[in-house]
Amino acid sequence: MHIEQLEYVIEVLKTRSFSVAAENLHISQSGVSKAIANLEEELDVKLFNRSRLGTVPTTEGKMVIKKIYEAMGKLAEIKEEAQRQTPLESGELRISAIPSMFMSVLIKAISSYKNDYPRVNVEITEQGVQDIIKDVNDEKIDVGLVSTFEDGWSGDDEVIFERLLRGEMNVCVNPHSPLALYESIAPEDVVKQPVVIFNGNNMRRFLADFVYKYGPMNVLFTSNNTDVIKRAVAEGLAITFMVDLGLQDDYYVSNGEIVPIPLVNHNLTNITFGSIRSRKRAMSNATREFLTYVRRHAASYNA
Image (cartoon, rainbow, N blue to C red; front, top):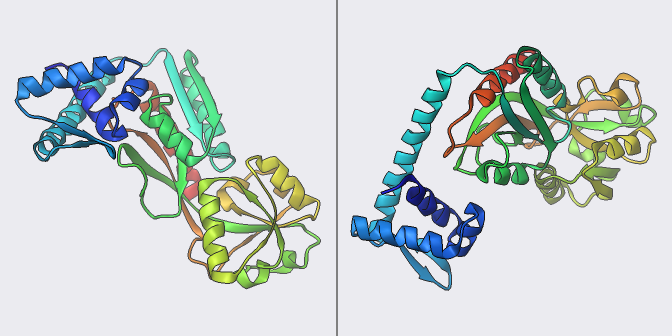
């Protein structure tokens, strides 16, 4: 029995396909099939059945695969413990964050981190939540910074979610709009307003729930460019919805070109932000130390 065989089993279970698993693992399909066949022969248990609906575990295979998951978890713990004994002097840290929300916390955390660990190479990308989850699972990034409307993580079970911050949904309006005089805004106040929306999974879910409860909205456009969205609000073309944390230290808000107002009387207003990392991969020293800095700076926002 080899560790690679156990990794192949987990990837086949996740993808429900030998061919897709082989592609994700960057090896041939025959290599995956042979490795799992050898493991089945060694254990004297058939792990998977193939059908037109995909590859699924056998009844006996489910119990064995459960133990494989537990074994891989213990292996990750062993690797993490070994890495803890090695001082962090250099390395690589790949981060992906949802746009705008984490940027203030992220920039301050990275600045402190790089000051203490200048030889660690840091790479940052911006993506939507689902793309971040996929890249964490595919081990293309070390840590993701994401958001959810739930109090706890309800996403992919193969990632570990750690809550860092809690934010609230705001309605962002032009300072000359009558809405700018409100201390809080209810859904009925904005349902007929032209609106621009960030094109992300959470915002799409928010908009769908909003429309279902209060009727159709006049969506001027959607975009994954937050600066374009803010400019449209600053020019009085539309309103938008943004989380308060993403507006702290914001140029448009500081200059008075956008006025953020709390949204009330709607269930999807509380947002939880946190970090995700792979459950099946040992956390590197670089990642562990970075998350320490993120927690430290996030605490100042929670205070």
